[in-house]
Length: 429
Ligand code: DSN
Image 1: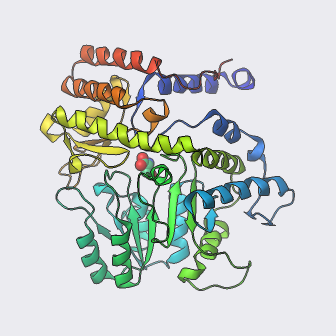
Image 2: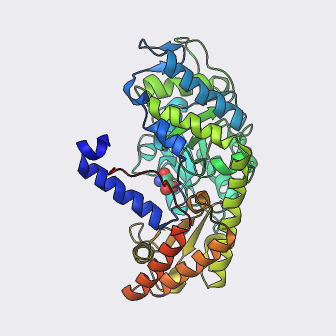
Image 3: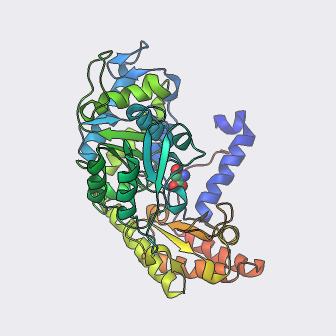
């Protein structure tokens, strides 16, 4: 259609990416397949409109319909997560976290978050990230067996008195105990921020406890287990005050502080096409079938992890409670980078990942991270996960044998053909 006629190079690259997404097993735990309805909203004319501000309080005219869209997204987010305030404008997870830090801290204040190399996130205080450069960052890690270390968190909090404690992870396979984090935050009078980006969908389905009512502010991306478009939200309780009224940095003012941190703090015009797609995804997530989806993600992750353990793989914490697992490959004599490449050749997309107390470099770490949200969206269940576990084991064992990896790849292809995605999309039509 228009794209193939006007820009065949982009159309061709998109078609190749579509084929990659169809033919392979997508096992990066932060990725997913959105619905056609979400894609349609994301590719909509919402992108044409400037609308700095919030519904009813904009700096531009002509915002009546984008107000409707943003209100739908906000109201659906509030209902789904049980909060009274939702900001749906952050362009991404990093922006949501930057905004939260900007809202609650002054440069030089102390924050505490989980070290990226133990499963945290770079915006939780990594020294080379803005969060570690403009704030004094204290980093907690994990216990020797890979669990979030709340005793260490408490000891560090008492020593450094952070103003903000961030709890959340990108490579943590277990349930997060929000209440324990609240105890630490209360001990030192810190704000508590929960970053639920990875587990938002599991919170909606009831497969992971919610931090609502425990954390002061919650950030999440919308494109991981929540299965929406790339984007993010900030959730909290309370109501924003009237524009221009001066507010102190205090718990009761968090909604106002967050809204002002997004605009004029760190962002300009909202991405209205993205907001529309978030609204659609939130409607989908409120359906009973989404609960089944969340349950199945976890069942699949448990089935896959037990098959891997049976095949002699060493999983951080020994297994999983959620959608992902981190595999320490040291006992297999292969690095995370080599495993990522071998699995990639076999049509299984994963990412190399550090393991707790990583002895190697983050650029060639000891582990890989695997997740089941995308395969579950395709309709795969425990039976398929057992086959996937075997295919992974075979690819890792034969990591330097191209012929064997090609054999695995053809079995991957046979399997993925049975679970088609986006049957009606062809960018070169
Ligand atoms: N890039 C995300 C992930 O893969 O978990 C975190 O920002």
